[in-house]
Length: 195
Image (cartoon, rainbow, N blue to C red; front, side):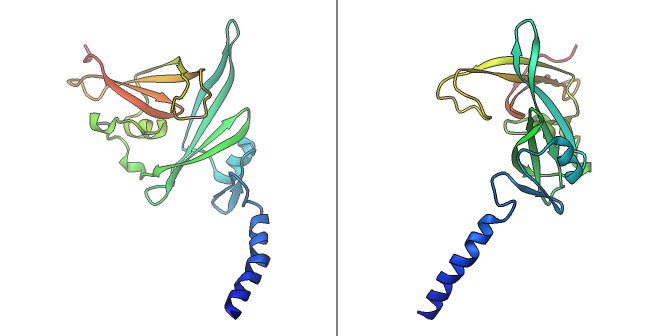
């Protein structure tokens, strides 16, 4: 009985304090000994976390006759094989989302661009780390239909940017076209061999 009352008192005194702690709110995460939160400016994040290992920029909206009017930036931090890669998403100059991806990798493990390595689910950062920059790339726009489970933060019937990257995995092998949406590989297909 006494233990039960002590636990009840502890819950009423300690739990509200934990909830009220700064950083216990949505989206906050540690970057070394600093705290980074949704809504922070890119310069604030860089001051706390250092320069990102990789940055990718995508259009989010275009206006006919004007061009690109909105962009999203993905910043990647690779802590090595003992931690998870973090992707920070900036929109309109503010941190909007933080995503933990798979385990990181050592700097010397890059460069293994075998056809088996190219698979759905890889991040754009992992693609560049393993295979280098693509031979060529292009951006197209695709409609995300109703009931779609497309990764990312898209509404139904919205046009979304999709990138296609062309890779050569060897002079005697077929080239690969890697399709990415929201910074993730969604499809890999084979095309003709180099001439």
